[in-house]
Amino acid sequence: MGAESNKSVKEGSDLKVTLDAHNIEFANGDVTNYGMTPQEERVMVRKMDLHIFPIVIALYILSFLDRVNIGNARLYGLEEDLGLKGEDYQLCVSLLFITYVSFEMPANLLLKMVQPRRFIPATALGWGLVSLCIGFVQNKTQLIALRLLLGLFEAGYFPAICFYLTFFYRRRELALRIFFLFAASAVSGSTGGLLAYAIGFMEGVRGFRAWRWLMILEGIPTILFGIASYFILSNDPQSTNYLTEREKELCKIRSHLDGTSLGLAGDEKKIDWQQCFEAWKDWKVWTIALAQHGVTVMLYGYSTFLPTIIRALGYSGIHTQLLTIPCYAAGAVVYLCIAYFSDKTGKRGIFAVGGCLTACLGYAILLGTPQHGAGAQYAGCVIVAAGLYVAVGIPISWMPNNLPSHFKRAAGQGTSMTVGNCAGIYAAFLYRTNDSPEYKLGHGATLGFVFASGCLFGLASLLLRRENKKRDRGERDHILEGKTPEQIDRLGDYNPEYRYIY
Image 1 (tube, one colour):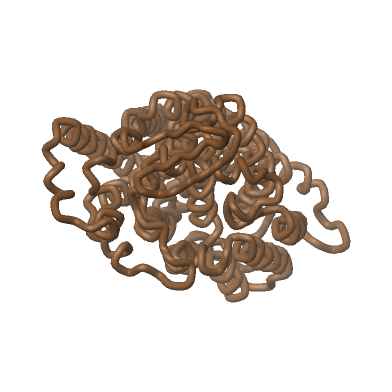
Image 2: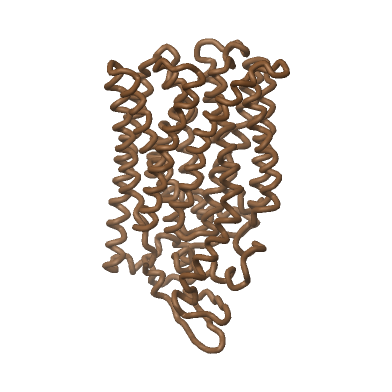
C-alpha cells in the first residue's frame, strides 16, 4: 500500500517510529513491521478478540432472537390470542423497521460522542425490557407499540458494533470478525428454533401460552448481558485495561500501517458534517448501500418466514422448529470459510457476488420444484442460507474498509445500513398468507433483488480495482500538489497513496 512507503525508522536504545508526520514512540522493540513481531501482534489481537467478542456476540444473538422470535411465536398461537387477522401479522413484523431504520444513522454518528461503553449497554437494556414486555401484550395495538420501541432500541446496536470494531482491527481482519456476528445470527436462528421447540412444552405453565414464555425467557438474558457489557467493553484500544502500554502504541502503529492515518479521526465532542457530506456524495457508498438493500430483503424475508415456509411443506410446528437448524448451520459454515479467504486474499467483491449467485440458485429451486415435494423445497432453503450470510455479511466489512476518515466511515456505514434495513419495512409483505405454500411472489421478488445486488457488487469491485491501478500509475498524484497537511488529512480515501480493497 502506498501509505506504507512513508516511513522512517531510527534504531538506538529506544525504537522511534515516525509515520506520515505522526510521531509514535515505543521502547525496546524490533524493527520488523515497525517494531511488531508477528507473535506479538497475534497475542495482542487475541487479547482483543477474547475481551470484545464473547459479549458482543452474546448480545447480537439475543438482538436477533428478540427481533425475529415473532416468527416462532406465530406457530404457538400468537395470532389467535391477539386477534390478528389477514395481513395484521405482516404489519406487526414490518413496523419494527420504521423506527429501526430511522435511528441507525443518528446512532452511528453519536457512538463516539456518547462512548461505546455507555451506548451499547443502554441499547441492550432497552430492547431487553421491551422484549420481555411483549410477553404480556393483550392486543394488536400493544404489540405494534412495543415492536416500534424494539426497533428504536435495536437500531443502534449492530451498526455501532460494526463501527466499534474498526477502532480495534485492521482492514483485512474485519471480514472474519463480521463473520462472528453473522454466524451469531445463524446461531440465533438455530438456537431460536431449538429454544422455541423446548419452550413449546411450557404451554399453559402458570396460565401462560408458550409464545408468551418465549418472549419473556428471551428478554431476561438480554437485560443481564446488557448490564455486564458496561463492565467488560472499553471505548477504544487506548482505554482498555487488558492491553499493555506497548500494545496500545502498537494499535496506533497498526492504524497507520493500514492507511487509516490518511483520514481525520474526528473530534469526539462534535460531528464533522463535512466528512458526513463527503460520504453522502460518494458513489461507492450509494452503490454498496443499494446492493445491501437487495440482499437485506432476503435476510429479513428468510429469517422471519423460514418457519412459516417449512411448515407449509407439511411439517408440524415442533418439527418445523427443528428443521430450521440445518439451514442456519449451513449458512454459518459456508460464511466462516468465505470470510477467512476474504481476509486472507484481501478481496471482497468476488465473494459478495458469489454469495448472491448461490442464494439465487436456492430461490430458483424453490420456485421451480414445488411439484417435486418437500425434499427439493427444503434443499432450496438450505442453499439460500449458504449464500445469504456471505452476500449480506461480506459487504458490511467492505464499506468501512474503504473509508478511513472517522465521520465519513460513520456516515457511510450508517447510510448503508439504513438503506439496507429499509427492506425490512416491506419484506414481510412479500410473503403473503394467501400465497402459501408456494410463496411465488416472495421467492421471485427476492431472487430479483439479490441478482441486482450481485450486479452492483460486481460493478463496485471493478471500479475500485480500476481506481487502484490509476493510483499505481501515478495518475492521481496531482491531487496532493499545493495542499497543506490538514487539507491532505481531509482527503481521506481520495489521497492518491490510499488503496481500496475491492
